[in-house]
Image 1: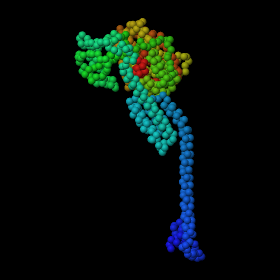
Image 2: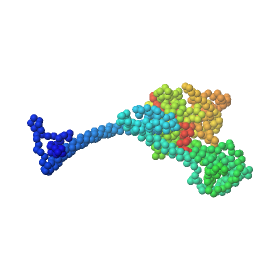
Image 3: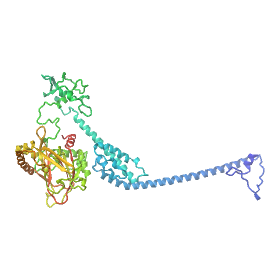
Image 4: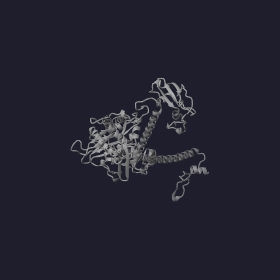
Length: 585
């Protein structure tokens, strides 16, 4: 009876209670009794009721789906609009950032980039990335990439411009550091190859030994090669130069054996081995025939042993006089790794002692970037990078170079025990002049001068080779003094350095009466030769001149108005090192 009332007594409302039609006065209308036999009618009413509920549920789900779709559409539309806005903003920033980073990084090495990061990215404390020398570059680089990593530049903390700039600097620094690492690896590889003695360029007769026998006193070993050349090696020398891993470090190639512990008269048998293998446990030392030939010290030579005398030599240079034209190249050629322009320019510098570089940017950074292609910038009393027109008192110095007075030919820093090897002048401002020579630079080949003295005034040549002269520099908290000859010669008696600067010469109080008279006599001869060999060149803005300070004297004519040079020094050791790695020395 309950089921019948549920099925046929009226439809249920949404709360599950049966509903009925109300009559007058709210009294329920009497429904006809259920006829048990009319089952088709009952089933039809049940089906319609279920269909109605299903329609309602479907309509509700459709409405919810439409609401969800609209919400998603609105989110995607907002996201698309924001992306378009961001893309437009990125395009607007991109060119500005590319130009700014390119200008900032132009001709800078990694050290210069790290030291100037705070200028281009002031949104973080980038000064903590500053480095003082090449040894601290890695530490500064690691700090910089941590600060500039995209994960550290969140949208909540930085604007789009700041994030894009940081990402661009991150990639630029990473690329520059990787290039530096590869360059240093190639340099080390080049240096290692120069110590790896091969037989590629040596005739076959020089790679095979014909006989090995001890000398009569048994103090040495006499070696003869197939081509008939022979040499004698002291047993102590052979022991001292053993190349096995125990005696010579396999990576650094530095000697590991204690020379003082080697007996003066080592004993042992000398034999020929067909395989020419090297390396031992130091019970015996084995030497390839090629190695012995390359290091034979008993073979006569003509003043220099070109196999191992990898030093600057006057006989490989071209000396010049007053008809000389400065060799020239361009800044871009010297900074290009792939064109060979750097090596060509360095070859000219080595040959003539002076090089003119055109189209040089007028900035300290560009000048320093070029200098670092050769070697470390040498710090002196003038700092690392200097200018003839300092604007800050801390960069000022007491020197005639910062005036507009004439300067006669001279070499720089003669008051140092070892003067700088190279001096770099970058003209950033040339004074307007009434004549062509006003403010012009003057150059003299010092090697040409002293070789002329050697040939035509031997007394003067010998005096300046043998007589130490006092050079000095006195400034605030600085007092530098040395006593050195004007002409310095190498072991073969050939000139390797000219130290001449009348402006920095101290009074000659250490010489005898006759020596002082001889000095002034020979000085007149010297000065006449210097004047006769002078070359004058007036620098223009964008001209940079590199001078071998051990060879070429420089000076300038007086001028009126403003004239400014910026530059720096490079040590002789670093200069020669670069020549060797380039295969020029």
